[in-house]
Length: 313
Image 1 (cartoon, helix red, strand yellow):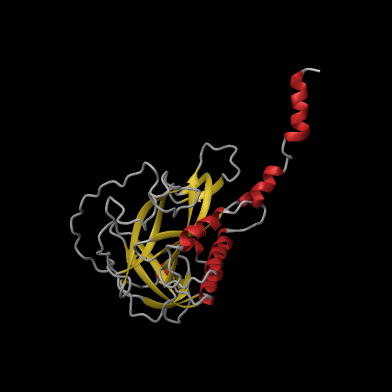
Image 2 (cartoon, one colour; image 1 turned 135 degrees about the horizontal axis):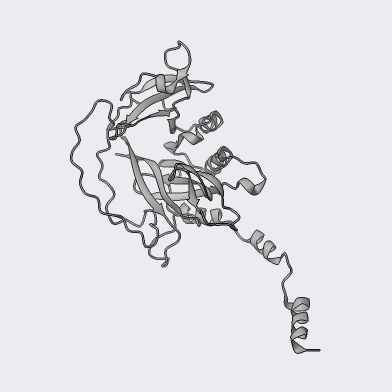
C-alpha cells in the first residue's frame, strides 16, 4: 500500500481533530466584551461621568462571505449599505473616553433582537455593574418610550435629540409635533406623550440648521444655548487617557476660524457647569506596542463616528 495513503488514513483516524472541536473551543473562549470590560475598569469612575450610546456601521461593500455583513443604515453615507453594525457604550468625564461595552447587531442571528433591545441590554448591564452617571446621552434613534422609561426606572438623567414628529403638549391645549413648538435658546417644559414632563430646548448650528434636544432633568436652572468656548482637541493626544487613533491616521491641523457674531438662539452653555461638545474620532484596534496606549476600542474598528459629549466646564 502506498505510503501516502497510509499517512492519510493515520491522520484521519488518530491525529485529526473532531469536526466540532473548533466550535467547542470558540464557545469556551472568553468573549471580547469581557476582555474590554477588564481593560476599562481601571480607567472609569462608577459615580459621575457621562454614558453615551451610539451605533456605527463599518461599511463592507465588497464583502461576500463575511457572516456579519448585512444591510444597515449608515450615517456616513445617509443610506443603507453593506457592513457590520456595532452599538457601543462609552463612558467619559470630559478628558477620558473609555469604551466599556458593545453589542453586535446581527439580523441573521434569528433572535429577533432590535437595536432598542441591544440599547436596553447595554444599559441594564451598566446598571448592574454599579454605574451612576450624571447623564446618559444618545441619538433620537433610541428615543422610544420603553428606553426612556427604563432610564427613568434607574433614576438616571437622559439627554437626547428629539425627532421633529414627536408629539408634546406645551401649554395643555393639545398635542402637537415638536417642530411646531415655539422654543428658543431658553428651555421649555412640555409634556411628552405617554411619558411625562421633559425639558425641551433648541440648538441652532453655525450653518443655520436647528435641532431640538430634550432631557428629563427638571430640577436645574433654565438651559441657555451658546457655542462652547472650550479649546478644540490638539494635534497630539494630551494623555494616555484618550481614545486610540487608528494606526496610520494622524489628526489634521486646524486653522483658526474668524470670530462669529453672537446670534439670538445660538448656543453657548447647555446648563450651569455643563457644556455640549461635538468631536469626531477614529477608533481603531489595539496598537502594536502594548505600552504605547491602553485598549479603549473594540475588536471591530469604528470609523468617523460622531459623539455628542458632555463635559464639566
